[in-house]
Image (cartoon, rainbow, N blue to C red):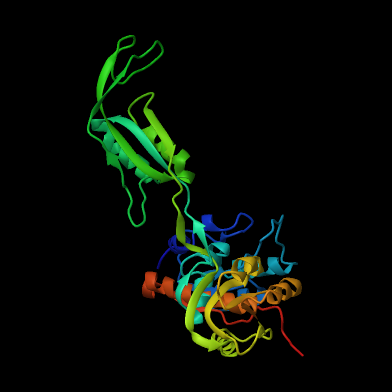
Length: 373
């Protein structure tokens, strides 16, 4: 059986916490990373009912989309709903992990899963995420010390390119000249005398966020008291395959038929499927955003899509959007749209860990609307 930290590493590789919005609260909320994991349950919301289901099933880990504590708290007594949720999980020895906005944007994330559930093809992000800024480290090292320096910076995160790691370049030897001054403790040379040393040039790229760690590793591994090196910022690395929302295609259908497809593809809620637009208009190009997506209305208005599907649309923004004669609107329950991600991440975990873990997707409807008259 894997340890919790191994499961975390997998999920964080698929849905990196660093890609979450700055206001978000993602990652491990509760649990011992060293404990073994036999059963993993998935849900959208960490409610009391979901926690009770996880405890009754004897889950070792509950993976949720929405954070239990999105805003900072000073305590979580069991006199509050959130406190009771955590108490139920803690009492059952069940860890809690949140993947929220980091799961929204990712490949095989929330919006991707929703597009897949609706049968869209040629799927791409509405807004592609920029790649993380890159640096290049150049260090001058005696030839016999180059290997440990390359290894040290690689272990610190330099030289990672796509599916490769430990990537670096070492140039042919050249000459370095220096004169140690009083107070220096040179590994090579004598104080007061000019020294010439044969050195190689080691270069590697790195994420800018790893700059401090990589430079520190290089300095620690370098044999010199004062190594010669420089760090340069690499030009804009462009856009990723991840991003906000999705746009894709499907064979032409009427808006009414598309809405019926949506209704069948999503789990049932009292909210249902709301539609704004001519029921008979043809739909073949679809934009969508899992969760609350009215922030993308202006983006999709002139994008050439036929319909925009999302959740939590407000009266005035929706009315003004429709008045402009652009895409139709389909509004679905927030919980139902995001629930489509749960079977996807469950399948990824099963594929990675096989029969070493047992998995389960909660079907408890945590949409807050319980009745429509």
